[in-house]
Image (cartoon, rainbow, N blue to C red; front, side, top):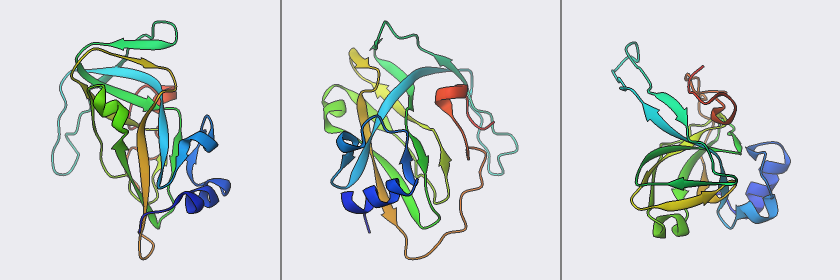
Length: 172
């Protein structure tokens, strides 16, 4: 079941789902929450993935400097960190979808599932197909929340507690 705006507000008032919103009245939508831009990064170096994660290597994050209060992004691949912190209870998962205006501007977003029990300030991966200006705090994605039939064991991976806005890296 997808959570409604009323249910989202109830969870937010209890310190769950989304913290550090700029303006909850604007960001909470009918069936999700708009997430806003804090930082923009490129990735350098090779990534390595394996089954057990023993050989996993994440590329280095390199912050793109804003020009005043905006980023002039050329076509390419970026990671965009959020202002908001996600706090999921063990019975709710999250999915991030693009806002339609971002798609129209040529920003294609790729994300993964936010597992029940995840807590952190994360990002989305963006492929920019044409020049675009993104202002700080722009609303680019909308997180939707799916209530599970029961409680999951909870996320315990290396990204729990991450804060890309603060640390500009993952998994530490």
